[in-house]
Image (cartoon, rainbow, N blue to C red; front, side):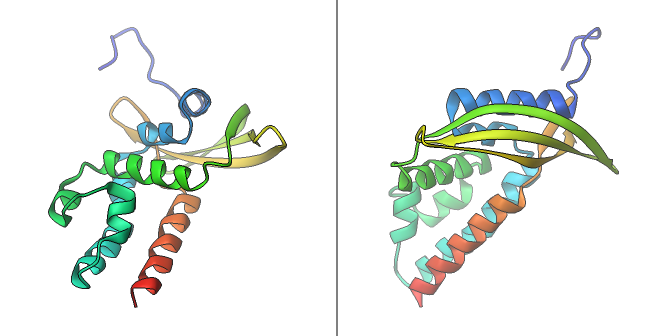
Length: 171
């Protein structure tokens, strides 16, 4: 809880904090800024993949992403830890790519009901060879005394694509 004199962080402030955390900690930092409902949604997209593996007596994807964990343990795993492990696995698959989060410039905020969409110009680099500046929309929803990110279309798409590709291999 914030002291009586403190002002709640704005979505723009949280977007800047999120970017600073990405700079300092890498992609794993995204979990800290996700709304609990977004984390639950993310887990619900991937969990059927692991359940399908169990029905077929396999555990390749589960072992690769989460180590020697039973399905019951995976189901009980905290949603934030689930996503942290997924992000770590995904980044390990791209160990030849070193991301750098170079710059963020908040351009504006668009309110939509209780949501706030922060439009930001971000510069991200890869392996000191490539630097890309593009607009990103970070969608925030209120959570307790601050704002948290909704699940982005990009993360949802990555999870759904991975689930589809791995389910195809199970057939």
